[in-house]
Amino acid sequence: MRYLLDTVAISDFTKIPGNPGVTAWIGSVDEDDTFLSVGVVAELRLGIQNRSVNRHGIDLEAWLSQKLLPRFAGRIIGVDPMVADVWGRNLHFLRAAGRVDYVVDALIAATARVHGLVVVTRNVRDFAPLGVDVLNPWTDE
Image (tube, rainbow, N blue to C red; front, side, top):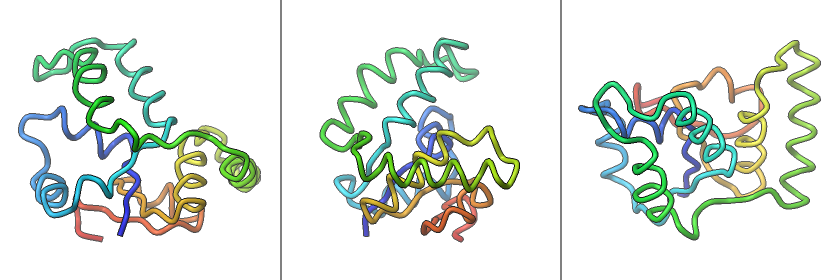
């Protein structure tokens, strides 16, 4: 099985200690089977611009540029025409449901669907209506 990590999942790596369920799960999978969406990278960048050091004293800029991006080199998935098509459909569906603030979630779900990936997130509710498989290592769902 291959996995697409949501922003909340990858952000758990900056917490000391991280969630035990997430730590156990990431230790149980082959890292080469884990991927990021460019949307996650954008959300991380936005968060870093808003706050350069987290509450644990971790330099988030260094974490992103020197640790995370090199660690996922070759496993960060961009937007191609197929992903863009599904993303647009997801956005239409979400907006029709009154959920206009889920642009990146719609992109992550589109990326997962096109590439046959399971979304790893704590926010199961946000992804469930988008028709993708979801894994919540915080609760083993």
